Image (cartoon, rainbow, N blue to C red; front, side, top):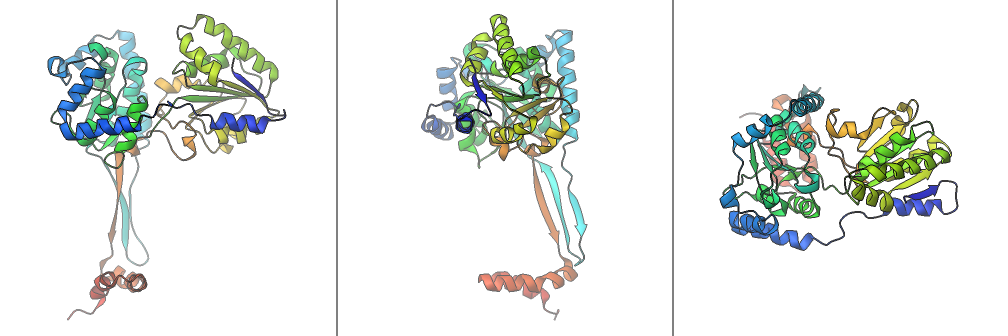
Length: 432
């Protein structure tokens, strides 16, 4: 059964604080293991990657082939049913259109002193996309990670995906073709991240690595940051739904379980102004779990980490939302814009009763790679800008340097940097 909290009850503040601070990440200490894997890949390159792939995925890369041929991707795409091909194409189009509107715009201006300043945005040369195998092998993640990179103008987009026991997910390969991925390698785990970060004879070195993975993959990305850029270190998924007592309990329950079925440590929370609605949602979730194919995972998540919070008024939801800073927030209320306008922290917000988070997972357009674990307080979802960098530029010219140079030299003097001051003052002297 999910945890039940009443906002007006004694001890609510402490119980809610415990809910906010509860740790759901993998408790295993993987840091030292990942550090060893990265060091091994840096030292031995392909040999280390091949040995680790044989150990963890039971695949002989030299026999199976390190890289999927373009024909493999073409065949996977051709093998889709017309309905699924149409769905992938629609999703790709919508995701691409949304991210086209995200492309940052530079600027170039001359100020009153005659100094020209500006910003230019350019893409990274190469990006690596990690796509998990097993439970989290989602073609939607391929589209969400690859398309922003393509829109940004990344020249080389390299995907890695494990194939445990040689099992290949054709949907992932088809999505790679639809999204515009350049190359796909059949490796995974921390060793794949290390190979992308440092490069090997087979695996090209990249500038940015994005994509979800288990605790070892997340830790490898964290330890590689600085050598490469990363999207984020993400944890278990989460959703917070706010309702005003007027929503269909079956819809709410389905949305809560849709998040719960991602992972046994995912978290689904309902905040409602109605105790009757809370009861109805709890009952609806129990009924749906009886027939849900993913009930084992969803039930474990909902029972251990789920929560229902009953509040007196919708305004009471604001401090709770901002404290939780959820990855996903659904505002299933009348006229949700007023509440959305006052929220400060959320990865992505879904407005109204007809906007399930699941629509955002697949093809609505906004990216589904979002900050988890309260990181929405300071982080944002994956965007085109994650595959770009900005370069500032400056052109003083004689007039501009004459206007601002003396002040710069004075500051250099105070800082004790004589060469800095000299480099400015030499240019301010009359020509001889």
